[in-house]
Image (cartoon, one colour):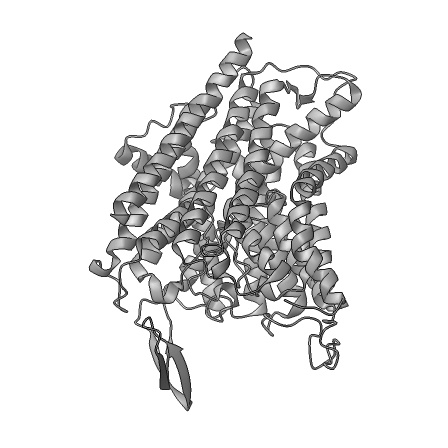
Length: 34
Length: 591
């Protein structure tokens, strides 16, 4: 159970980090358009 | 303080200064794909690696691709490390038959080494098998450092390139950093360490018969006290020299032994101690020259070096001064320096290193994101302990971690240029690139995530008696320092411990894991966003309103921005920790 939790939490963190990357990129595009 | 102590400090700094230029120029050639003498050996290996892994070395990546590839690479290697730790009891190279690492500790360690932190909530010689140390931890020591260098180079390319959508190739940069810089450096360095007496073997631990038997009492898990008479001592062995080399050169800091660089098998002599401190600083110092060469602004590289050197010298002066003072609470003890003793505060320090080399090591290891220790920071005088903490809180930009120090400092450069632009009422420019609102927003994101993690996690730990406070060895301001240092070290990816805090609990293992991941990856993303944004910009010719970034005025402004941002953010917490402890010590109270 612990193993699943640890692996799941790690994957979740990196998914958040990838979403954050996309968010930062979109902010840049938005600023350029604005 | 003694003249001998200062001579050793300045000799160390002179050594770094002399080697920074040739190494920096060499690294610039490596990352600009120019010919080097090492190509004969490494170019065929590099080609073979790309052929085996299917990497197209001509492919250029946009900042988003660079970031996502780095994140996925880190996730996969972190999970592989976790798996090996959990399965080490079934795997070879485990002569001590060590059990599987507990899941929360395995996660903490996997995150710790993936993020170049090397925070260790465990005793390595009784927890990690030789295979775990060599295959996973040493692997991360190489690749987390190489990734840091690749990221710094990506930012430098962003500054140097004009109207470009790309920053290079993460796989190529990481491979070249490992093959051309870290690997040859570590091979030579390991042999030098072995010459000083650092052990290198795969033997089971030695058993030494004690001259005099020892009686100890220990409390078991069932709460019963057991008295034991010990007649033998287990002396840990292992492939230490090879691990030690990349531990220091990659500013990783995770010790093969629990005592880290205070252990005589890791750091046996004053010469090995000098080599260790030098190897922490040499690549980060060289990268400032790489910055100057790759941006065709060598004076700017030296201006950044000067800012780092200024902050380093102030830190080492305060640490050495504080540690050379006698403890006012020990009235009846002779603490003066003499022919027979080092004098000052020798608690927690190795006699073979003394006060000057302990204070210098503590400053160097926390200026960089290394985290190796040759003395106990918890035993430093309050102001001496303040220096390592402040060094990390400033963002470890004083030479800093391999790559991480330079890109951290360049974020402060963007802010310094922005502030200078506001002062003179002109659009801020950095080496011909206009600094616009998006760049400053990303820089502020980078700067704000850091204290948010440190202060947020520290506050939560302090609010929870059963989780955060129950691990503390000391009360009062010293206890606050121990918790604050732990989250500062984790978020700053330093990895040194103040000690006095049992961090091998579910709460600390998991919360420190989160702090390490946030401190590494959520700060890298906005940094790469700035690199991508700068790369796309046109070059603006210098005008009367351009703030020159190679002058002493720029260096002073940069130092000011680093200090003000760090001091303003953390001063309230520091005033309740080491500063209050210093004042109370002089009022006659200790914690």
